[in-house]
Length: 266
Image 1 (cartoon, rainbow, N blue to C red):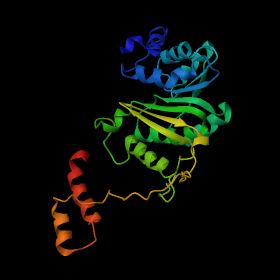
Image 2 (image 1 turned 60 degrees about the vertical axis):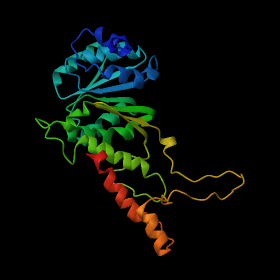
Image 3 (image 1 turned 180 degrees about the horizontal axis):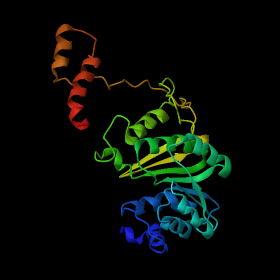
Image 4 (image 1 turned 90 degrees about the vertical axis):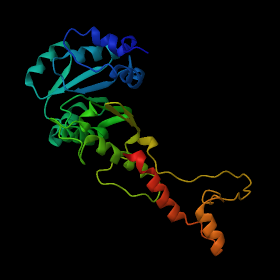
């Protein structure tokens, strides 16, 4: 599908002020945001710039939506005369977010198109997710900065993409017995979607329950576990047969397979 046929692109073109987006984003916007159209929502965009996206989002979501802009530049307060709510502040400051949410309350969508540094994106994610309503969404865009050297000083251990991988570990820690993480968001994030240059988080506290094992009352025929069986033409099988051992050398197999898998991680 051509991005020019998306609803968000059509709204983008009709904005009276300048805005800059990447072509691949419009399909993602349509996928993530269409369910919120013509509903009474609070939409927050970090990064007002020239104001063009504020008008585009109002056109896309409809008159029932409250459109909120956040920026460092006080001059963007001028867009309040068009009915937008504008807050001036630093997205990398926890104090700003505490004050912001105390005034605006919980929101439905946060779109981070702000400064794009690791620190800004991570602090924003950590502060915003607990303040997004169930069935709401956080979208962080331009995460390709996690891979750019000039100006962004990435790739690094503490890039936003690596933080996202930690959050994947975090939500999987809902499985019993797995390690729990500091600064956990596992009781808010139900799922994470990764696109080129965009990460989205689906917020649903009701669905973020610890996993439990459930069985029905059907007959158990006790099938044989074959996962660890050795191939009969393998060297390890021949060693097992020669020494008449019961071991399937599972850890040794794990090490051999791990070595074979290295190429997939380069």
